[in-house]
Structure formats: C-alpha cells, structure tokens
Length: 574
Image (cartoon, rainbow, N blue to C red; front, side, top):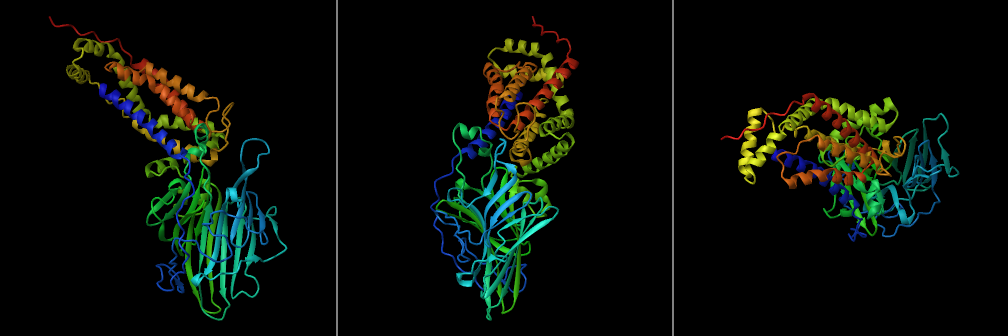
C-alpha cells in the first residue's frame, strides 16, 4: 500500500507542478525590445520555379526581411507612426468595423465582443495603428529589385464610409493603382455577414510595354503586449494563454514562437504551399491565409519594439499586357472553432491553441465538441460543464467502481495492517513483505485504486487548456457569483468547496501502511490544490468541484455497499 500511496501523491503533485509551470511560463514579462538587426530587402531571383506553381511564376526567393516599396511602413520600424489617412476607408459589418486602405488594415473592432462585462463597454480592438499599441495587417506588391509600386487609392474616392446593408450577404471595397501606373493593380476586400474572414483579391496587369517581375507579400506586425506580473498576472486569465506567432505547413505541421523568445531559436525561412501565418493572443488572433496553390516564404521579423511574421510570394513574371491573380484571406477575430473549420484550411483550427502536445489538443477538441452539444441543450456553459462531468463519470464508471471497491476492501483490512505495522515496528522490509503476503492471501490489488486516476489526470489537463482557450466561454456566466467562466472565482468559493470535498474524500480513504510523513503530505493535498485552483478559470474549478463531489458520493455509496465486518485480528503465535 505504501507504493500505491506514494504513486498517488506523486501523480497529483505532478498535476499541480505542471499547472504551476504553465502559469509560470506565461507570466514572465516580455523582454525588452529585441535587438535583432534587420537585413536589407532583396529582390527575388528570377529563375527556378517552385513546385506546384503555375507557368509564369518564379521562385519567391524572399529573405527574412521586410520588403521595400508599396509606400507602407516597414514591419521592423522601431517606433511605428500612424499612416496618413488620405486613402482610408471604414467598413462596417454586423461583426466587424475595419479601417483600411489599399495595403493595410489599421484598425479592427470586434463588435460582438465587449472588453468587459460592464454596460456600455467598448468592443475589443484587435488591430490598432496607435504607436503605443501598434498592431496592423499589411499586404502589398514589390517589383523585382525592390522597385516601389505606387500606393493604391480607393476606386470610388468619395466613398469613405461603407456599411453592410440590411439583408445583404456581403460588402466589397476596391482599391486601384493611380492613373498612369505602368503596372495596374486592383485589390478588392470582401467582408461577409457574420464572418471574421476577409477575402482579399488582387489582380495585376502589366501595362508597361516591357516584361515585369514582382511578388506579393503579406504581414502581421505588432508591439507585443506587456505581460502583467505579481498578483495581476495570477488573477488575469490572459497570463495563461499563448502569445506569439504561429504558422502551419503540410510538411512540418503546427509550429510557433512566443514573443518572449521570438528570435532565440533562429530565423524562420521556409517555403510553404497551402499553409498560413498568424499572431495569437488570448481568445483572439489574426492570420493571413495565402491562396492554397501558391507558394510563399514564411519568415519572422523582430527589430526595435515590433515583432512580426510574414508570407512573401509568389513571384510573377508578366509579359506586356499579361495578367496575374492572387487571392488570400485575412482572419481578424475570435477563435471560434465552428467558423475556423468552415474555412476548410488545413490546421487552421489549431489556432485555438489547446496545447502544444498533440494528445491533449486532440482530446480537448473532442471535449469541446461534446461541451458545445451540451450547451446547445442547456443554454448555459456552466450547466454544460456539470453535464459533461456526469457523462465522463458514466464513461469512467467501471474504473471508478473498481477503485472504490478496492478502497472499501482496504478500509476493511485497516486494523490488520495497523497490527502488522505495530508488530514489525521499524523493520520496514518485513512489514512490506507481510503486507504483500496479506494482499496476496486476501486477493487485494494494491494498484486497483490508482488506474482510474490516470484518465482523470489526462482529462483534467485537456480541460485546463480547453477552458482557457474557448472564446465561446468568454464572459459567459454560470449562476449567482460566477459571471465569467474563463476568469477566476472572485470570492474563491469554488476552490474552498474543492478543499472540503478533497478533505471528505480523504476521510473515506484508508491511510494504513503509510508512515507519518506520507500521511502529512496527503493531508496537505487539499490545501495545495485549493491554492492552485484559486487562480485558475472558474469553469475549470467548477468541473473539479462537480467531479470531486460526484466522486465523493460514488465512493460513499460503494463503500457502504461493500462494507463488511472487519476481519479477525491476527493471533500471536505462542
């Protein structure tokens, strides 16, 4: 039994340590402005077609550097400055308000997501060209050799405020090259009702009378948010979530880099077809999704106070009068699983960063699917969590029943184990041998109570990441004092209930065979878990309280059911 209890202590302590390690990684403040020097922009080479490219396209060949030209501010600018709004257009749909021009999305408000629960709270502002909160999405064209391409201007100059009309499915706004441009570019943004994916369609026509080569680039750049420290970090759910760049390629899958070590693992320089790039934060993200059959070179930039990720390419070689087309989607919004899956982009649902470990990510996706179905039934995420606990308890009941039967049998033999301990005193080796002989004789499985703990640990960790990341639960109330399931319990009532439930469970769990030190460690476990859970999302603590409460009830019923008169004490041999 000693080994069993030691294993249980180690297992639960490991869960606590893992949670604290995750919290510790996220609470470290972002380092000072990176000093990585920016390499000079270079033009893509004009030879060497990439696999899968259409005729006339050439190797993107773009280094990990900010492209010049197009009249846009460089991603590596140490002190971003607001861009003149001469060509800006504001577009409003039912879910978004954007300020954009022919190459930048400067400002993005998420109309259905208030910053706080307070009445009249302004919407979340995801993109912002204010130098203090610089975060923009950029895209443009650069000619071979870095030659500048004139900035695009609104196709309808007098149209600066565009709103999606009632009953209309989508709204469009177009920008074109100014009159006299040798290479005519037409960019059209399409915003669809209810969608956070913005279609960006580029048409390029060479009207110069001579061959032209150039490439398209797409970037996301921002000043990383300053991580809170101290108590502010412990009580702020954003401190627990991934903040940094993510990208996806068919070859390497889902990869990322946190802001705090943005360039420590070296530069990013990969050529990808059918992937995407993104900047993630708690509950929200931005992403460029290039045309799936066009290759682009992904790279990171970090200089001054700005970090960014970009996709450069493909390149096009156009004869006089020839036309090229390149499409992309820009995601600006919440991590809504249903909408991300609807985009039909490989790996995009992984932007909901449940875990960097595949097993936890897959399990969390499955748990969220079930939770979403339960929410559709109950209409409340808190009750859906409790219903999920009940379902998991039913699924795991055979294991739980075996665990509680083993516990009940152990309680029955506590007096005999205590007698063995008294008989052998400090001779632990003889005590262990006698106890194992007793287990063998009475057909007691000393690890019977441990096996059910393993799936519960795995589910707990998957739920931890799932509840942290699910924007669907953001500011979602349960009942009474719990008005945000993704924030901590403001009055620590649920953590206190968890302590009480764990303490009561211990009272039903025999501790015979444990030395005093182990018993003291077991007795401190409710307090340790209470402290850990006190600063985790209320939804996760609600799960733990419901799970522990049902487990306590199950254990009490089964213990009563299988309780038998204690066996006769050992008779001393004369």
